[in-house]
Image 1: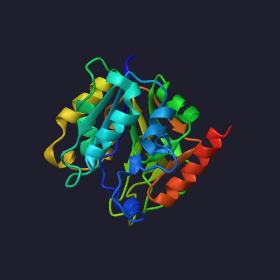
Image 2: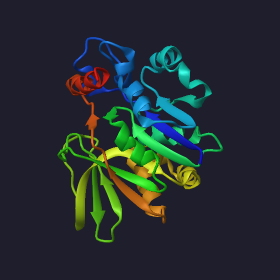
Image 3: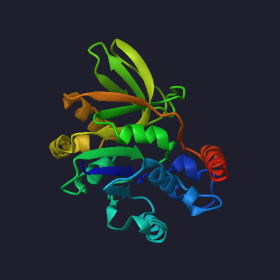
Amino acid sequence: MKRSLIITVAGTATRFNKDLTKETLKCLYYEESPENCLLCQIIKNSGSFDQYVVVGGYLYDDLVSFAKKNLSYLGEKLSLVYNPHFRDYGSGYSLNVGIKALNENIEEVVFAEGDLFFDKESMASVADSENSVLTTNHEAILSNKAVALYIDVNDHPKYIYDTSHKYLQINEPFKAIYNSGQIWKFSDAAMLRNIVESLNEKEQQGTNLIIVQKYFDAFTGKVDAKPMKVWFNCNTVFDYRKVLEIIQDENNK
């Protein structure tokens, strides 16, 4: 099976840049060495794919320059894609253009948001699954940062997220609730492509959860739920420095 990894890094990273004196693309920020940046770590810890699609927008020229210098080893497997609506549309448009950039022979897709850090073992369990995959993490569900995953009374997965980072609300009974790992595997790339093609204008302007939700609502195959053992969402430089400690420990082994 030919598979692709989509990583979305188009956002302006307002919260992250509050800690810096120079505007920086969050996924490229590093201390000590470029290989310590989130983008390099995501690619390193994700294993082998037939195509790597990185969707940028904010400071796109910086992404292109960084890729030429530090990701050249991926060769033709790397596809850089520009999201022209990174400021006025939601995160879903980055996933939208990423899916449209998939090679024709791609049959499976793993999608990871570009401000994450995770361990190789957990990601391997996602990528190597024969099924579509939802992921969870160990952190508390906080309305100012979490993407909440809950299971409704019909055992269907549902997602909620507040783009204003204020409050979360579930308006129906549910069986369980988790903090999403913000990584998904779509084992049916053809279905994923069809969903993107069917989006109306309003849906295209929304978050990536619209595409994710539509896929899992329509998918009739088996779905695995995978916990991420090591997982961080780097909203701030302080978050990144916690990740850097883990990277340094790994490098010193």
